[in-house]
Length: 231
Image 1 (cartoon, helix red, strand yellow):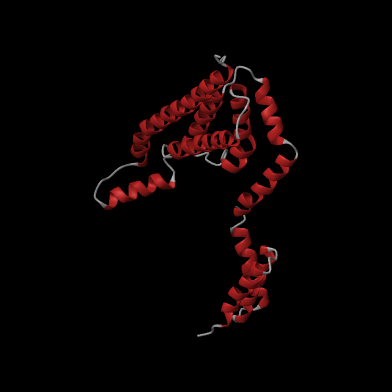
Image 2 (cartoon, rainbow, N blue to C red):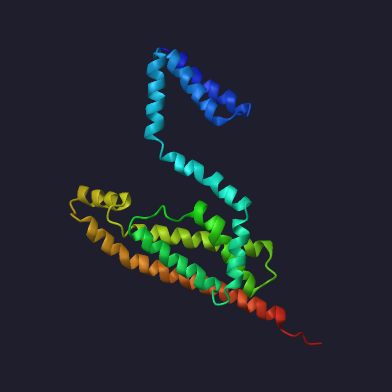
């Protein structure tokens, strides 16, 4: 057995320990393992190119973070907070409930990638929720801000998780169908999706109530702050 191709692992370890750029480190490791395995250079380059083309969709997720970072550096979060502050009729509960409804409906049609934590919650929904919470309680603490961000992220997660099960072409729905088929129970993807609809409605109601209760908590705290003290 030829153990020389395992030197590619050593190249990765050394490159990461020296904190080199991960991309050239991985490419060098692949070239090292391929050449030591006896693969011709042209064949190896063709294999790398084919792997890159077949996995190019992953680059969309890799590019998401730097794009969001550039937008935040340009003031996207500040603009979102300023815009929400100008909308007097938009409360924290209305904002998150509206987003939850849109997120669930999009997930029901299989459009789970339209919104999400990196591209929507962090740069837009979280700062907008903070601005809406500040209209209720201007003196938000750092713990309050973390809680508001967590509620915004949870709203996105609930909307996607309980909405995507209604989409008949979802991998999870097909997995459920295969599981029941193995046990002699025949269910169509449409039947599974329809049974998931009441759960999605219940999830929307429960999360909406949670958001509303949190808003009431902020309102009570704001009332205590502005209440006149005796003595």
